[in-house]
Image 1: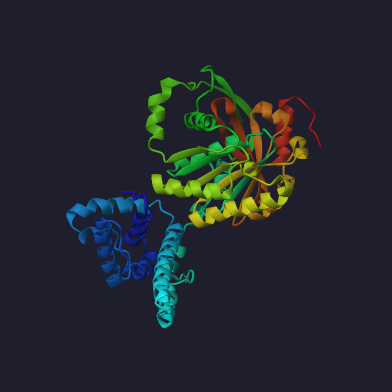
Image 2 (image 1 turned 60 degrees about the horizontal axis):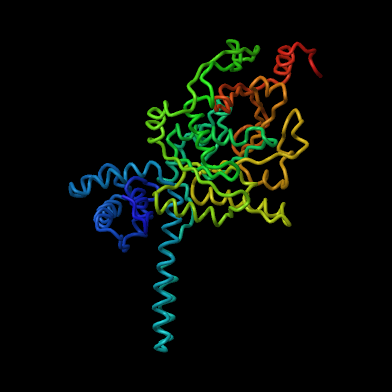
Length: 454
């Protein structure tokens, strides 16, 4: 179905067919537009006539409007409508039509200027200015279909699953048009967290693009397979996994240990891995450390859309601090990169998740807070959701870690959860519970036979 030259035409028709909120606006914008493919033109004509008459998207009625040979294309558009980013599609359409109108007006005005027809030039330019009204978007008006859509929106589904139950119960996770930043000390699982979030979103049938600037793409790919299938790296012998002992009221009572045997990464799991991964929309792209610019990232995403017909639901950047930054203006450049990354999330309608390293003093701290972020405080000001990760030496031995919800725009923050982990089988989080700080440290100290610390 993809058209490598104007790949978004199918997405525009999918929105016209299935989305009441934008169908009327599209019917006005596209009434005189010539689609590049004959089938697109036939289908567009039928959809536009229906919306012009009834004021809504045709949806299932579209199949009654075209001949049998075009109904397969309608089914493709219907499926495509479930995974397009409406605002991004409309923004691209607006830009495309505006550029086309500008180009046509300029060429016509130049021809008239060569003929010294100055009145004609003025008329052409005035005509272009009037035509801009067709592309103008005044913004959301809270009425009719837009109001109905807003009121029907389930606030519990705005944030996507994080795969960490304590966070999911509090509706904390990545979301479209937002940036989530995960802060941790050096070598404390930032890349494992990003893989974990990628796998969780893949399980939820999201399209995931993972940009790696630290590890090579084969290492990242191996971690995805390991996490997805809970495979060990080198041995199939049983592995000790820490368990959270929880009472009937959901309170942490202690820590236990269970031995789990899992297959190891190898050709024996190919059939299972291939069957699972072949159903997922997933891309890993490696860039050398310190070389990727915002323009490079935009160009990659544009090409991915043109060649693969893919706009990611989740864009992972591992990690933003390793993009190309001017060392002489480290703080300023870092802040600009974070703002522009969030801009990419907003313009493309995707969720963006990245990590940042906390400062050196946080490595031995009991808690890592948002104030421990390295280089530039504007990272905190730019991000929509900030999670910090803390782990003592004792916790690392036990396969435990703590996540502090430092900031969330629309939910409660300033609380923490405890997670169990096992990197031997590729798992950043196996289980989790909201943390009662005093009870937890008593349990850890009792585990090691120590007196309770103040």
